[in-house]
Image 1 (cartoon, one colour):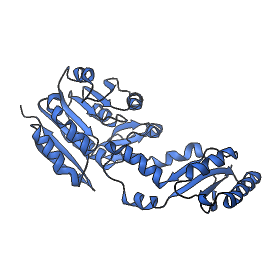
Image 2 (cartoon, helix red, strand yellow):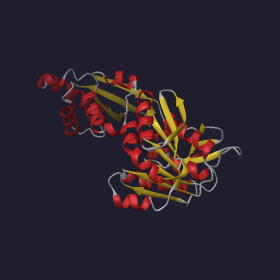
Image 3 (cartoon, one colour):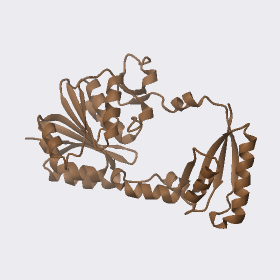
Image 4 (tube, one colour):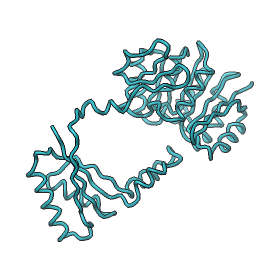
Length: 318
Protein backbone atom coordinates (compact mmCIF):
# COMPACT_ATOMS: atom_id res chain seq x y z
CA UNK A 1 0.00 0.00 0.00
CA UNK A 2 1.39 3.42 -0.97
CA UNK A 3 0.86 6.65 0.96
CA UNK A 4 0.96 10.39 0.39
CA UNK A 5 2.63 12.71 2.91
CA UNK A 6 0.64 15.96 3.05
CA UNK A 7 2.12 19.07 4.66
CA UNK A 8 0.02 22.11 5.55
CA UNK A 9 2.04 25.26 6.29
CA UNK A 10 0.50 27.40 9.01
CA UNK A 11 1.14 30.70 10.75
CA UNK A 12 3.11 30.50 14.04
CA UNK A 13 0.73 30.80 16.95
CA UNK A 14 -2.23 29.30 15.09
CA UNK A 15 -1.08 25.73 14.54
CA UNK A 16 -3.36 24.35 17.28
CA UNK A 17 -6.42 26.05 15.75
CA UNK A 18 -5.61 24.67 12.30
CA UNK A 19 -5.08 21.20 13.77
CA UNK A 20 -8.43 21.40 15.56
CA UNK A 21 -10.07 22.34 12.28
CA UNK A 22 -8.47 19.40 10.49
CA UNK A 23 -9.61 17.02 13.23
CA UNK A 24 -13.16 18.37 13.02
CA UNK A 25 -12.95 17.87 9.25
CA UNK A 26 -12.27 14.16 9.69
CA UNK A 27 -8.48 14.10 9.53
CA UNK A 28 -6.61 12.53 12.43
CA UNK A 29 -3.13 11.20 13.26
CA UNK A 30 -1.71 14.67 12.73
CA UNK A 31 1.97 15.48 13.27
CA UNK A 32 2.46 19.06 14.51
CA UNK A 33 5.88 20.64 14.00
CA UNK A 34 6.14 24.13 15.47
CA UNK A 35 9.17 26.12 16.61
CA UNK A 36 7.36 27.66 19.57
CA UNK A 37 5.96 24.35 20.84
CA UNK A 38 9.33 22.61 20.62
CA UNK A 39 11.19 25.49 22.30
CA UNK A 40 8.62 25.55 25.13
CA UNK A 41 9.09 21.80 25.65
CA UNK A 42 12.87 22.19 25.77
CA UNK A 43 12.66 25.08 28.21
CA UNK A 44 10.35 23.14 30.54
CA UNK A 45 12.78 20.21 30.50
CA UNK A 46 16.02 22.17 30.70
CA UNK A 47 17.36 19.96 33.47
CA UNK A 48 17.78 17.09 31.02
CA UNK A 49 19.79 18.73 28.24
CA UNK A 50 22.73 21.10 27.86
CA UNK A 51 22.53 22.14 24.22
CA UNK A 52 20.58 21.89 20.98
CA UNK A 53 22.33 20.68 17.85
CA UNK A 54 23.02 23.58 15.46
CA UNK A 55 21.42 21.78 12.51
CA UNK A 56 18.30 21.20 14.61
CA UNK A 57 18.19 24.87 15.58
CA UNK A 58 18.35 25.90 11.92
CA UNK A 59 15.60 23.46 10.97
CA UNK A 60 13.32 24.96 13.64
CA UNK A 61 13.54 28.54 12.40
CA UNK A 62 10.03 29.68 11.44
CA UNK A 63 8.75 26.09 11.58
CA UNK A 64 4.96 25.83 11.81
CA UNK A 65 3.45 22.98 9.83
CA UNK A 66 1.15 19.99 10.13
CA UNK A 67 1.75 16.65 8.43
CA UNK A 68 -0.83 13.97 7.75
CA UNK A 69 -0.94 10.86 5.62
CA UNK A 70 -3.45 9.44 3.16
CA UNK A 71 -3.47 6.38 0.97
CA UNK A 72 -2.51 7.42 -2.55
CA UNK A 73 -5.86 6.10 -3.79
CA UNK A 74 -7.85 8.32 -1.41
CA UNK A 75 -8.78 10.96 -3.99
CA UNK A 76 -11.89 11.94 -2.02
CA UNK A 77 -9.85 12.64 1.11
CA UNK A 78 -7.33 14.76 -0.78
CA UNK A 79 -10.11 16.74 -2.49
CA UNK A 80 -11.85 17.31 0.84
CA UNK A 81 -8.63 18.57 2.41
CA UNK A 82 -8.01 20.96 -0.48
CA UNK A 83 -11.57 22.27 -0.12
CA UNK A 84 -11.14 22.93 3.60
CA UNK A 85 -7.89 24.81 3.04
CA UNK A 86 -9.39 26.90 0.24
CA UNK A 87 -12.28 27.92 2.49
CA UNK A 88 -10.00 28.77 5.42
CA UNK A 89 -7.81 30.98 3.25
CA UNK A 90 -10.89 33.15 2.75
CA UNK A 91 -12.36 32.88 6.24
CA UNK A 92 -9.21 32.63 8.39
CA UNK A 93 -6.47 34.77 6.80
CA UNK A 94 -4.71 34.89 10.18
CA UNK A 95 -3.93 31.19 9.78
CA UNK A 96 -1.45 32.03 7.02
CA UNK A 97 -1.18 30.80 3.44
CA UNK A 98 -2.13 27.21 4.36
CA UNK A 99 -0.01 26.08 1.45
CA UNK A 100 -0.32 22.34 0.82
CA UNK A 101 2.45 20.12 -0.47
CA UNK A 102 1.94 16.50 -1.49
CA UNK A 103 4.77 13.97 -1.47
CA UNK A 104 4.46 10.36 -2.62
CA UNK A 105 6.14 8.00 -0.19
CA UNK A 106 7.91 4.91 -1.53
CA UNK A 107 6.25 1.58 -0.93
CA UNK A 108 7.63 0.30 2.34
CA UNK A 109 6.94 -2.33 4.94
CA UNK A 110 6.42 0.25 7.70
CA UNK A 111 6.25 -2.36 10.45
CA UNK A 112 9.78 -3.53 9.68
CA UNK A 113 11.54 -0.58 8.00
CA UNK A 114 12.32 1.24 11.28
CA UNK A 115 14.65 -1.60 12.23
CA UNK A 116 17.05 -0.52 9.50
CA UNK A 117 17.98 2.48 11.67
CA UNK A 118 19.48 0.27 14.39
CA UNK A 119 22.46 -1.68 13.05
CA UNK A 120 24.91 -3.30 15.52
CA UNK A 121 27.02 -0.61 17.22
CA UNK A 122 30.62 -1.54 18.18
CA UNK A 123 31.84 0.25 21.31
CA UNK A 124 35.34 0.14 22.75
CA UNK A 125 37.42 -2.96 22.07
CA UNK A 126 34.93 -5.78 22.63
CA UNK A 127 31.46 -4.44 23.25
CA UNK A 128 28.70 -4.68 20.66
CA UNK A 129 25.34 -2.98 21.24
CA UNK A 130 22.68 -4.58 19.10
CA UNK A 131 18.88 -4.79 18.87
CA UNK A 132 17.13 -7.87 20.20
CA UNK A 133 16.21 -9.12 16.71
CA UNK A 134 19.93 -9.54 15.93
CA UNK A 135 20.77 -11.26 19.22
CA UNK A 136 21.64 -14.52 17.45
CA UNK A 137 24.26 -12.87 15.23
CA UNK A 138 27.01 -11.98 17.68
CA UNK A 139 30.65 -12.57 16.65
CA UNK A 140 32.54 -14.78 19.10
CA UNK A 141 35.05 -12.04 19.92
CA UNK A 142 32.36 -9.55 20.98
CA UNK A 143 30.50 -8.98 24.25
CA UNK A 144 26.84 -8.36 23.36
CA UNK A 145 24.68 -5.68 24.97
CA UNK A 146 21.16 -6.42 23.73
CA UNK A 147 18.45 -3.73 23.78
CA UNK A 148 15.01 -2.97 22.46
CA UNK A 149 15.85 0.36 20.73
CA UNK A 150 12.17 1.03 20.13
CA UNK A 151 11.92 1.75 23.86
CA UNK A 152 14.38 4.69 23.59
CA UNK A 153 15.99 5.94 26.83
CA UNK A 154 19.50 5.19 25.53
CA UNK A 155 20.64 3.00 22.65
CA UNK A 156 24.43 3.33 22.87
CA UNK A 157 24.74 5.61 19.85
CA UNK A 158 25.62 8.78 21.76
CA UNK A 159 29.30 9.66 22.39
CA UNK A 160 28.68 10.23 26.11
CA UNK A 161 27.36 6.68 26.56
CA UNK A 162 30.09 5.17 24.43
CA UNK A 163 32.80 6.85 26.51
CA UNK A 164 31.37 5.41 29.74
CA UNK A 165 31.17 1.95 28.19
CA UNK A 166 34.75 2.16 26.93
CA UNK A 167 35.90 3.30 30.39
CA UNK A 168 34.02 0.41 31.98
CA UNK A 169 35.79 -1.98 29.66
CA UNK A 170 39.12 -0.67 30.94
CA UNK A 171 38.33 -0.52 34.66
CA UNK A 172 35.64 -3.01 35.68
CA UNK A 173 36.72 -6.24 37.32
CA UNK A 174 34.98 -9.53 37.89
CA UNK A 175 32.70 -9.58 40.93
CA UNK A 176 32.43 -5.80 41.31
CA UNK A 177 29.23 -4.05 42.43
CA UNK A 178 27.87 -1.12 40.41
CA UNK A 179 25.34 1.69 40.85
CA UNK A 180 23.90 3.44 37.79
CA UNK A 181 22.31 6.83 38.53
CA UNK A 182 20.10 8.00 35.66
CA UNK A 183 19.98 4.49 34.26
CA UNK A 184 17.48 5.07 31.43
CA UNK A 185 17.40 1.95 29.27
CA UNK A 186 19.73 0.17 31.68
CA UNK A 187 22.48 0.02 29.06
CA UNK A 188 25.31 0.79 31.50
CA UNK A 189 24.10 -1.67 34.14
CA UNK A 190 23.71 -4.35 31.47
CA UNK A 191 27.19 -3.58 30.16
CA UNK A 192 28.62 -3.88 33.66
CA UNK A 193 27.05 -7.30 34.17
CA UNK A 194 28.20 -8.43 30.74
CA UNK A 195 31.75 -7.41 31.73
CA UNK A 196 31.64 -9.55 34.87
CA UNK A 197 30.06 -7.40 37.58
CA UNK A 198 28.40 -9.41 40.34
CA UNK A 199 25.43 -7.04 40.61
CA UNK A 200 24.17 -3.72 39.27
CA UNK A 201 21.48 -1.33 40.49
CA UNK A 202 19.87 1.19 38.16
CA UNK A 203 18.03 4.30 39.37
CA UNK A 204 16.02 6.76 37.28
CA UNK A 205 13.49 9.47 38.09
CA UNK A 206 11.19 8.32 35.27
CA UNK A 207 9.04 5.32 36.28
CA UNK A 208 8.90 4.16 32.65
CA UNK A 209 12.66 3.70 32.69
CA UNK A 210 12.42 1.12 35.48
CA UNK A 211 10.26 -1.21 33.40
CA UNK A 212 12.29 -0.62 30.25
CA UNK A 213 15.57 -1.37 32.00
CA UNK A 214 14.17 -4.60 33.45
CA UNK A 215 12.93 -5.65 30.02
CA UNK A 216 16.33 -4.98 28.46
CA UNK A 217 18.06 -6.91 31.24
CA UNK A 218 15.74 -9.85 30.45
CA UNK A 219 16.78 -9.72 26.77
CA UNK A 220 20.32 -10.32 28.03
CA UNK A 221 19.31 -13.12 30.37
CA UNK A 222 20.52 -11.13 33.38
CA UNK A 223 19.03 -11.59 36.83
CA UNK A 224 21.60 -9.72 38.96
CA UNK A 225 20.01 -6.39 38.04
CA UNK A 226 17.78 -4.28 40.28
CA UNK A 227 15.88 -1.19 39.13
CA UNK A 228 14.46 1.62 41.26
CA UNK A 229 12.51 4.79 40.53
CA UNK A 230 13.27 7.94 42.48
CA UNK A 231 15.50 10.92 43.17
CA UNK A 232 18.45 10.10 45.41
CA UNK A 233 18.68 13.72 46.58
CA UNK A 234 15.14 13.92 47.92
CA UNK A 235 14.01 10.33 48.58
CA UNK A 236 15.39 9.28 51.97
CA UNK A 237 13.95 5.77 51.75
CA UNK A 238 15.62 5.20 48.40
CA UNK A 239 18.90 6.61 49.72
CA UNK A 240 18.79 4.15 52.64
CA UNK A 241 18.25 1.24 50.24
CA UNK A 242 21.15 2.27 48.06
CA UNK A 243 23.50 2.86 50.98
CA UNK A 244 22.87 -0.61 52.38
CA UNK A 245 26.18 -1.41 50.69
CA UNK A 246 29.04 0.46 49.01
CA UNK A 247 29.89 0.18 45.36
CA UNK A 248 33.07 -0.31 43.39
CA UNK A 249 31.70 1.80 40.54
CA UNK A 250 29.06 4.48 40.19
CA UNK A 251 27.97 5.62 36.72
CA UNK A 252 26.37 9.03 36.15
CA UNK A 253 25.62 9.64 32.48
CA UNK A 254 23.21 12.57 32.58
CA UNK A 255 24.09 16.29 32.12
CA UNK A 256 26.54 18.61 33.84
CA UNK A 257 24.06 20.38 36.15
CA UNK A 258 22.72 17.09 37.49
CA UNK A 259 26.22 15.73 38.05
CA UNK A 260 27.19 18.90 39.93
CA UNK A 261 24.09 18.51 42.11
CA UNK A 262 24.86 14.85 42.81
CA UNK A 263 28.57 15.36 43.51
CA UNK A 264 28.28 15.79 47.32
CA UNK A 265 26.52 12.43 47.77
CA UNK A 266 28.66 10.38 45.38
CA UNK A 267 31.55 9.60 47.79
CA UNK A 268 29.05 8.08 50.21
CA UNK A 269 28.15 5.43 47.65
CA UNK A 270 31.75 4.41 46.92
CA UNK A 271 33.86 1.78 48.60
CA UNK A 272 37.47 2.74 49.37
CA UNK A 273 39.23 2.98 46.02
CA UNK A 274 35.89 2.99 44.22
CA UNK A 275 35.43 5.02 41.06
CA UNK A 276 32.67 7.23 39.69
CA UNK A 277 32.43 7.58 35.91
CA UNK A 278 30.55 10.70 34.85
CA UNK A 279 29.52 11.61 31.31
CA UNK A 280 27.01 13.67 29.35
CA UNK A 281 29.30 16.65 29.92
CA UNK A 282 29.81 19.26 27.21
CA UNK A 283 33.40 20.45 26.92
CA UNK A 284 32.29 23.93 28.04
CA UNK A 285 31.05 22.47 31.36
CA UNK A 286 34.01 20.22 32.14
CA UNK A 287 35.63 22.63 34.61
CA UNK A 288 32.34 22.93 36.55
CA UNK A 289 32.00 19.17 36.89
CA UNK A 290 35.65 18.66 37.83
CA UNK A 291 35.40 21.38 40.48
CA UNK A 292 32.27 19.80 41.96
CA UNK A 293 33.78 16.31 42.09
CA UNK A 294 37.02 17.56 43.64
CA UNK A 295 35.01 19.69 46.06
CA UNK A 296 33.27 16.50 47.19
CA UNK A 297 36.66 14.94 48.01
CA UNK A 298 37.13 12.81 44.89
CA UNK A 299 40.34 12.66 42.89
CA UNK A 300 40.13 12.99 39.11
CA UNK A 301 42.04 10.09 37.57
CA UNK A 302 41.14 10.30 33.88
CA UNK A 303 39.27 12.49 31.40
CA UNK A 304 38.08 11.26 28.02
CA UNK A 305 36.92 13.25 25.01
CA UNK A 306 34.74 12.42 22.02
CA UNK A 307 33.44 15.14 19.74
CA UNK A 308 32.07 17.93 22.00
CA UNK A 309 31.51 15.60 24.94
CA UNK A 310 33.66 14.76 27.95
CA UNK A 311 33.74 11.86 30.39
CA UNK A 312 35.42 12.06 33.80
CA UNK A 313 36.65 9.22 36.00
CA UNK A 314 37.14 10.12 39.68
CA UNK A 315 38.22 8.00 42.64
CA UNK A 316 37.58 7.83 46.34
CA UNK A 317 40.97 7.31 47.97
CA UNK A 318 39.95 6.60 51.58
